[in-house]
Image 1 (spheres, rainbow over the protein chains, first blue to last red):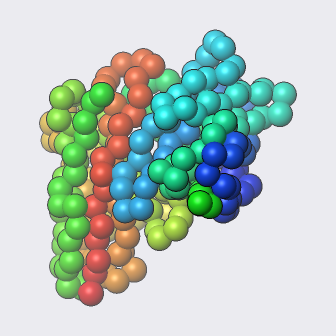
Image 2 (image 1 turned 90 degrees about the vertical axis):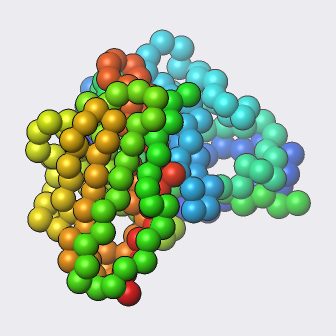
Length: 115
Length: 116
């Protein structure tokens, strides 16, 4: 069965510093990978997704993620964080790319920004 | 992008009553919608897959008689929490995507349920 692991529960970085959030997945076939962001009490917003092709994926708000099959990883990065980036970040994997494909979420990483 | 709405955004009810939560795709049709539950400071747990015109598919451990799902049209799925108890208090989120391949799933803003 597919699963997602986010090893970091909480990360604090200084504003303007670079960020990397880790994500490892377990899936037998080609995974469909996502990063979502959730602000307190809000729904989820898609940052980026990887279905196929270029393993470096660009997303919204200056985020990018790199799919590394050999490491079963899909880490999220941003070169310079802003205070508004403080939120909960979820990595997720789907079994397919159809509208009927279930998405399984990691446990999330809470990002705090130090002024 | 596509929009998914949920109603109500928050609800407080007494123990033993039933609560209905609506999930609507506002500008697209969705043959499949998903219902998630999120505990405070926890991840989203997939509860069930809602299929238009047929029975929902529940994840292991989710009580189908407790959480009734009806997907009566291509734009509406409802989740009814029956005989709610305090332990059912949670944040419920739905998602949907336009039918097809390669489509992104869009998430609703969530419904916070508090059972007293």
